[in-house]
Structures are given as structure tokens and as C-alpha cells.
Length: 301
Image 1 (tube, helix red, strand yellow):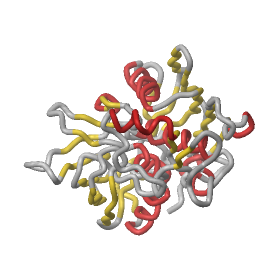
Image 2 (tube, rainbow, N blue to C red):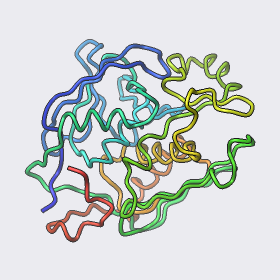
Image 3 (cartoon, one colour):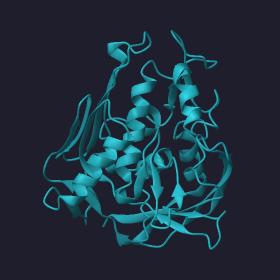
């Protein structure tokens, strides 16, 4: 039988919110079976909780932000969600002392280290997956995104920017997790921004905690970060990292294939909402035998 997963012990890390600029303590705690992924704002009276659900993503300006019925916000969840998806964590409590998950180095790698420190344990309940039965697609004027049936989990992403660093051969990436490792191929890819965007980002009250230690910054023809890029195609790899996190807001890993062209958090969430609303397009599946699980989901323990 394939069982649900949580963490073995409580772990804590301190960082800064990319958009709020607030110092934040992040604490991960084990959760019981069928509890899902729940965020708790420890800085607010009564420590309100915000469950991780597609229909609570109500702000997608440069991140995925959950907002519950009482307007309690938890911002920039996508990188942590991406790391949780890597290890197939079903149930966990995420405590935050501020309205945003810390950005760490701009990738999901720090969260993987934190999860490794906590340890992953199986629980006494069957694990559920979301299996795509019918293609789902959102098309907008200059972008599109879709999920299609596939016996595993793979992603293909394309980006387009009129900039010398975004060469065609570095602007498309595909990863099939039956053949490739999330840890080595995706987790180290960092978020990025252009210098010309930063003033406007700040005017909108965002990016206040951003710096060269937690984001790639691009000027007219080069990367300003010391050491440059971790991959020639780090930008599109990070978009895949984001998409994995955005899809895992469904609360279960998806058996299917994701494809995106210039998509971001807003259209990713539209796709997930459309999927959830179309009950004929997906189903929950469980596995009694490990051999029946698609190779994409044979996790690192």
C-alpha cells in the first residue's frame, strides 16, 4: 500500500519575505492523516489558519498568495509547495510569523534541506493522487497552459523575452520525473527580475525584500549576480519549479503532463480551478502495490 506522508519532527528557519521585506520565522510541524497542508499565521491574534486550496489563491502578482475568508494572507507559497511536491508530503503544518513564506535563496533548495532535516515518514492512511482524465487548457492572448493525461508526471515550458540572455535554445525545457531528478535539475533554479522592472515592482508594494542573494537580477545585457547563472537555462527551469508548486496547491500530486507557454501564477491557478470544477476531467486514485505507482513518484525517502 502507498501511504500518506508527513515530517518526523518540527524544524524552523528564519528568512525574509521577498515582497513584504519582513523578517519571518518559518516552522514546519508534522500533521495527522488527511489534514493536508495548512498555514498558520502565528503573528496574528488567535493564530488563524489558511488551508492550501486552489480557490484560496486570490492574489497572483509575482507570486501565489492564499487569502482565506477572513482576509488572512499567506504570500509566496510556490517555492515551498514545489519542495513539498518533490517529497510527496501530504500533511504538514506551516507556521509563519509574518504574511509571507521566506524567499531563502530564491529557489526551493533551502526548503529541501529543511525537509531533509525534519525527515519524511509514512502514515497509516492511503495516499491519494489526482489523475488527469481529460485535457484541460487555458488560452490567453499571449500565453497558454494545459494539463493532459499521462501515466506519470512531466512538464514542458517555453518562455519568450526580447533580451540577449534569452536565447531560443535556453528558453524551452522539458523534464520527465521518471527519468530526471527534481533535486539536481529543478530545485536550484532561482527567481529572476529585470532591472527596468524593479522600480515599478516597488511602487506596487512588492519586491521589498529582494536582493542579489535571493533573486537573479538582469540588466540590459548581463546578470548582475556574482557567479552568474547556475544553468544556462535557469530562467525557464525556475518557471517549471513555480509550476510544480502552483499545481501542488491542489493538495495532491498530479498524474498527468503539464505544458506552459509564457504562463505564470495567475493562469496556472485558472487552470487548476478549471480542472477542479470539471469533475469528469480528473479522479482520485490510490495504489495498493508500489509496482503500480508511476515511476515519476518513487520518492527519495
